[in-house]
Length: 142
Image (cartoon, rainbow, N blue to C red; front, top):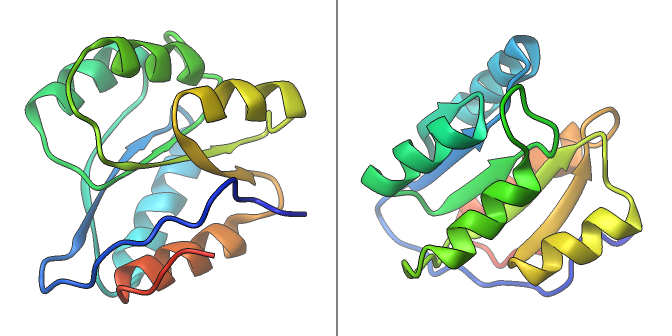
């Protein structure tokens, strides 16, 4: 299964890539934080459980990669993407959906808001980790 719509290239630099995570499940969030901490060249820039909290934190923080779930305790990932797109702020981050809802309808909707990668939370954590490892090493995403 192809998980990309395009292959963005991120320039190698001395600074680590900053990842912002939007995930409401404590268990999944802790697993993702543990995974991110193990990847050279990647740092957790922040996290949130819901849409409003994410919008507030993203507005004041800097990040290079946004990883988000679609279903959240408050709001949802698609309306978060829409709000970010409508904010008028230049958002050059790589957007990744990591969710149990990776249907074609969600893929098409996500692509409208610049989502480049879609990973199934129940079976593709290793693929997401491989992508982040490549990005952390300054390699082009495939």
